Amino acid sequence: MNLFYLSSPSTFFHFAGRLAPWFFVLAAVLGAAGLYVGLVQAPTDAVQGEVYRVIFIHVASAWMSMFIYFVMACYGAMSLTFNSRLSAMMARALAPTGAMFTFVALWTGSFWGRPTWGTYWVWDARITSELVLLFLYFGYIALANAFEDPRRGDRASSLLAIVGVVNLPIIYFSVQWWNTLHQGSSVRLTGTSMHAMMLTGMLLMAFSFWMYAIGAALTRVRSIILERERRTRWVRALRPA
Amino acid sequence: MDHNFYLAMSYGATAVAIAAELVFLALGRARAWKQVNEERELEAQD
Image 1: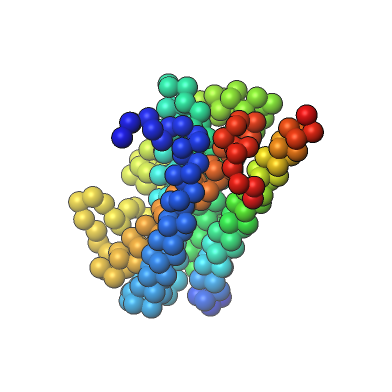
Image 2: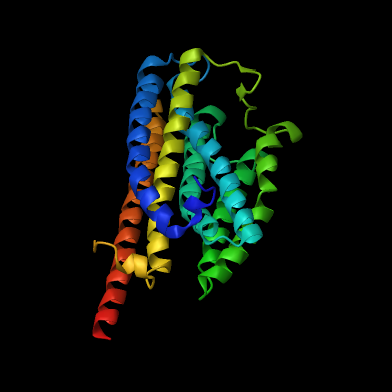
């Protein structure tokens, strides 16, 4: 298969349409399994009690907020480097889902912080840099839609996405670089200090959110392709919805 | 406050956020198809 076969919007439109439902199904199955393991099977935490179960969505959404931003910036870089239309569309399609996961990470962190730290919010390095990530997503979405010509919006927003990548290591290493209230990482590449069932629940939720993000991005990019290519012959030839 | 409140607010808000995004995805799809159909009508008039 030609490496650039899928870089054509018309080809990718059909490809995304076939794949997206499967990613939503996978997300639902993994999510159901993750919720069962996290809320039923995983043991009660010895220190935090039941409220620790917030981490099954908090950690998974925080991981996704950073991962989606990184992928979005990669698409932005590809768009600027190769001047490829589809890369810019994919970056645009990912941004709202990334913003949603960032909001969920902040919200759930707040409802975990109140019973454990005694406060909903603190201007801690980890939490503040995650809030900056939410503003970067908002800035990206606003900038991408601020131009009459969408290609100009693509270029400006791609540049913002690439510059914003500097915030990702700040979020990740903030708990090591500064003295923060937020706890350090419990899961590392070298191992974990968590109970196996807790780790299983968290990973299942993370994979569920990952599959959901792919399904949502593929669905959204189809709408973006339709809007941008509506004057082309292949879109007019599509069966009316 | 009971820990159930914090769990409900976390899981509930996440469910609402995902549901809202799915609604926006459907609205975006409908808007895109509307634009395509308008373009078709314009072409038919020509």
